[in-house]
Length: 97
Image (cartoon, rainbow, N blue to C red; front, side, top):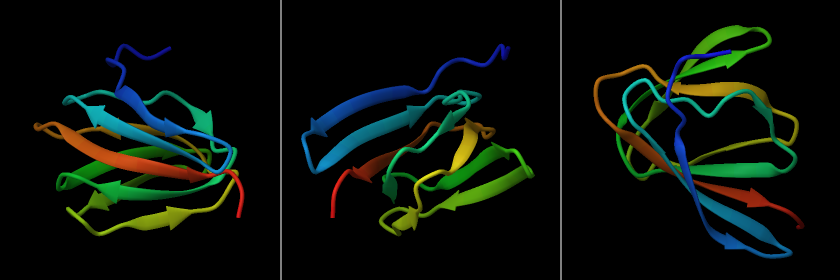
């Protein structure tokens, strides 16, 4: 069990095709361990570095404002803001093609 604060998730759209969620991370905040049930796209709305705890070990992910990236279904991780400023991104989960 972690002592970190929880990241804030705000679902903006949730329908049969997609789920769009804004994620905000105060310094030290985390998502908690989870596995993605859909392919997804991340659209950063701030610059910074996230720490990703994965079953294979820790890695970092660079957020660059406006530079999107995608991941496939099944990704398992805990996402942590290990830096000194708030970080945020929009996550678009694709429920059907």
